[in-house]
Length: 107
Length: 119
Image 1 (cartoon, rainbow over the protein chains, first blue to last red):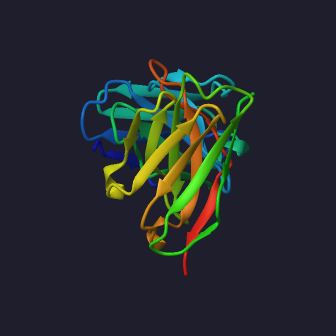
Image 2: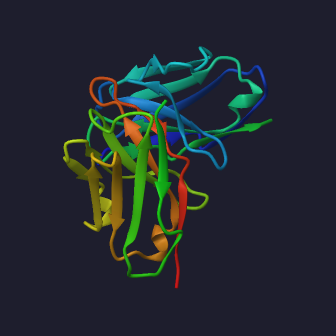
């Protein structure tokens, strides 16, 4: 199975900050990676698919990059609604595997 | 707009079978992939398996062959069975739709249902 290593596991930031989360795959997964946001008690929501494509309706302050093994999710200017946990998910092969998650907290 | 709703017992006894159904409303089950994902209390997301509307399945081998996912297109729903449940299977279970190739993404999710495995 492809292992997804996500970092950091948590970070503290302020509104307006630029935030970057990384995900590294244990093998080349081309661009088959998505980023999901989850708030407490809620289902995850897709933000980015195919590594860099913004899901419809998602604010443009979210962006994704990378290919092969290394990927990033960037929030250009953190908003109050963005404090949540973020997961990467590889959809290159089976079994699908998630990163461990990154909790973005208020500084 | 498409909505998913998980249903099933909230309490399952150890060694019994955990059974859940995901009902799809506002759209057809045809043409998409359908996933089950779970989240143990305070932990991250774990992919359980998925089914294509035609019936093709893939499962997470970490679950030791205990999983069966099936689809009923006439009822617009799909189901999960997890045999020989243990306390480690206690989790929130989500169903989700995947658009499939080339734009893979789990773009619609159910609200999740909590299942506790306990005697």
